[in-house]
Amino acid sequence: MVSRPPPLPPIRGLEPVSLTAWEGRVVAVVQLQGCNFKCPDCPAPHLVPQVFESGTIPLECALDAIHRRRRWLDAVVVAGGEPTLHEGLGDLVRLVRELGLRVRLHTNGSRPEELRDLLAGGEVASVAMTVRGPLDPTYAVAVGARVRLAAVYESVELLLRSPGEHEFRVPWLPRVVEQEQMSSVLRMLAGARRVVLEPARDGNPGLRALQQVARAAGPYVDSCVVAGRPGQDYGARAGSRSVSSRDGA
Image 1 (cartoon, rainbow, N blue to C red):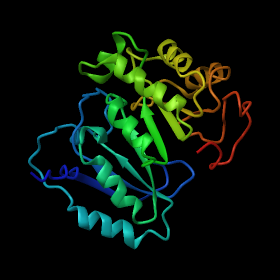
Image 2: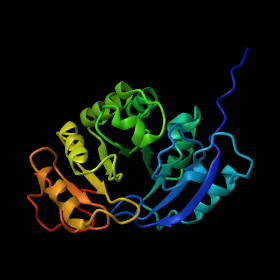
Image 3: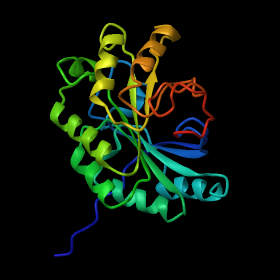
């Protein structure tokens, strides 16, 4: 019996050129449908349902759009939804790499087995993992779903041990994950090479509160910045100096 390869993930969105998805690089962003979290502050709630009625972008169309722009692109970011839900993710990544482009994966870290396989195979050049709170009951509230905290912790440890590039993103969620909780997350991420603190979607709290969290991260992580303000790095390696947009990216 000949086994069939897993189906390629459904592509729901394509941003042909982005200057923000991988700081300091010009990338295309491929968005995959389906997520196992229902975060109350999700920036792309239309990508959450794993069963949906609206159409997807044919793979060949997405790859053709990327191929036509490859001379101006540094990489492709594969985001979601949650990409690791899809059994054919590795095949999609390999197709992108055949275009001569590196790949960054955005993940919520809930599926460490899939993440481990991608890292072990050298399939991705960079991983950006969102850590939505300290690993306690707060996490289920922050993600709006049941979650295996041990799995999230395993993904964190995988990235901390991996020699490749990584970035942890820590969002502020009013009344759930605020200054004290974010500081707790940063202590858990001790040794991280880069952490990005994300303001709440409604713009609160003010910049000063996030800067206080970032400044306190100095002893724990190499680089810590506030999203939207990449010029100031509060990490231990940066020593709170001003940095260019490509430093630490």
